[in-house]
Length: 261
Length: 244
Image 1 (cartoon, rainbow over the protein chains, first blue to last red):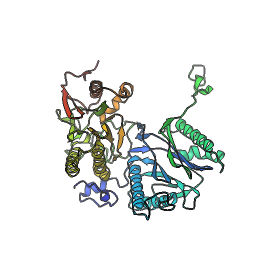
Image 2: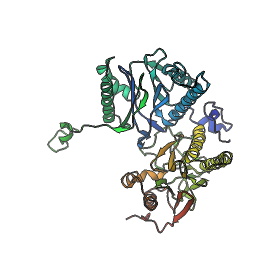
Image 3: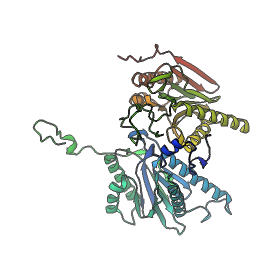
Image 4: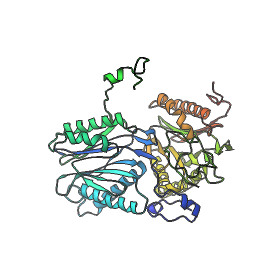
């Protein structure tokens, strides 16, 4: 069996001629290097998403400067959790499509409205890609958040997962974030959030995730899409954490205690 | 027999490796479970550290099949092009085949473009092969080298085919024992001698604790215009396997 450079090797799953191998080969492929939650929120000027910069190898925090927020064209951001190699493949695919769109457009200037796929188009395209891979029992093992503007000019925030489920909403969280961050975002969300408030909310959620998600890191990136500035992705930075509450300082293991923790 | 992507780490209860279904556990030992009959693995310690103007790559020399040392003098640092090298871990057969393919493609690229391939190009070629064939391969590689455009760079390509540029990289089963050491000793902007010393120290410590790593330490120092091979015999290691 020769090694293939093209995606004929993965997306087209031919049964192997060696029957023992095909019977035992994992059809769905377990993720090896994984990213955790991605959060997104719409605010007054546009859309903002956040993710930490960790990719774990099982339980090991192996890659601490992995970039999980990527801009795929001048107007769209994609954030991804799950298998990092599949996320790299997805973003490469989207960037390749954006480049092809640019080169085959009527005009080479990106500022022309409607020449580049808006966020909603990217989201829908991803839905099709993910669902088709799911049908072949060979998913791209990711939870993706697509952020940007739809062609009508409204801010857009959408979700696509490894089996092709999609939804759009005013705020989104994947992975652990869907359990821990969503309730926080539901409480604090307002449609007219300022940029500073939106960022503070996302940072708060990332802080809670660092406290409570074993696979999270306190180094994060925030990215936003606005009408005026387009796509901006921050450099990774550390967020502050608080360890000063009485619960940390009070010892509990003493003989005279109740043995509590 | 299940062809799992569980890493080649020998201990089945390692918390840090993905703990997935192993298929029939009965006859096989932890080490041989994910190898085909007769296949050898490079249970290994490999690493690459950039320095000012180049990269130092290092590896141990033990190749094991289960608990037998199939080759105690192997060379896990393979040359992909004049100034681009690759440390191999995982299945020896898979990584040898991958190395052959990448060498071939890089040589072709150099001829077609009439310039030195960049380390990034080599890393991405390797990534493509591993990613697109991820179901059939067990290979974790570290690509290190020098090119006129980016200087010294190191890319880590673990199981699954993620390709990620790193300030330094360690890999193989022995690397788990030296994450703490590397986190504490690594500094940005080391000189060639400092990088070499750290590589030798770290691999010695890994070999001292990992049963699948051992033998001698091979190093390759790549910089503009030169490549320097070195090795430390098993009885001259900075920290011997007998420990303290």
